[in-house]
Length: 52
Image 1: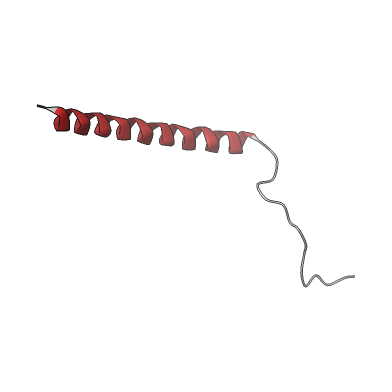
Image 2: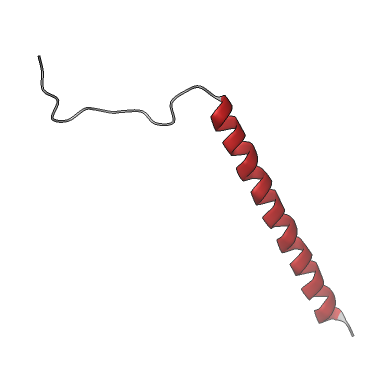
């Protein structure tokens, strides 16, 4: 008795913890990108460039 309610509470708490970890990861990732001065993308080739 009480197995389903216990599992529901555990799944809810586990989901909340995973959500918070995701938010913390997003925050840390954005801080790292803003502190890192390297470009966020690499230009492979430039098309339709007029040569002088």
